Every structure is written in C-alpha cells, then in structure tokens.
Length: 120
Image (cartoon, rainbow, N blue to C red):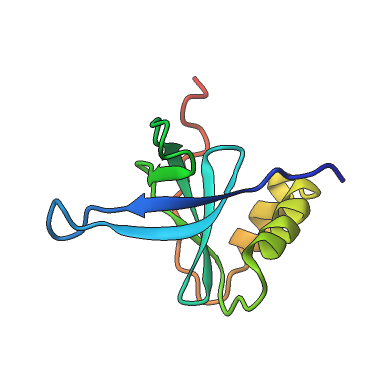
C-alpha cells in the first residue's frame, strides 16, 4: 500500500467562553485538511485549514465543522492507529461504512444526515 503521507502538526481549537481562549492539540494531518488527535485517550477527527504563515509550517486551525470521536481507549502511537483506520476505510465502500459503523453503534440515538445536499 502506498504511503499515507501523514504530517505531524498542531491544531488550534476555539475560541471557548471568551474570544481569546483557545486550546492547542498535537496530532497528524492527512491530505492537508483532516486532523487526527488524541484527547483523554479518545481518537478524534476534525476538518482543519492550514495557517499560511512562513514561520508556522505545521499549524492548522479548526474548520467550521463539528468533529468526530473515532475510538476510545487508544493506547498505541497515533500515527500507527490513524494508518490502520485509513487503510480500513480505503477498503470499505460508503454503503458498508454506513451500515457497519454508523447504523450499528451501541446506544446511538437517531442521526440526521443530509446525503442529498448539492445533488440538485
């Protein structure tokens, strides 16, 4: 399998209660806009945008979308875990992912998707 080209990076997330309150997370970026990071042992994913400054070459800001928690209790190195997950996703169709992963989550309530947006 070809290299995933994961990049070590940092993400600024916020603001929180006050406009100057931010948090920074270390993690890995995939394809320049998908940031994977660990928070209290949970593997999380957010859409990010790169900060275009010559002296901040590995800094990203959280995009305008919500994040996903992908796994709990992660105890392996993040690059190894992310590589395994992405390789699994590459081998799975969207329909299989929807049925196998999203529909059958234990304790999951109803989920609202907009699969027809921008489809005319």
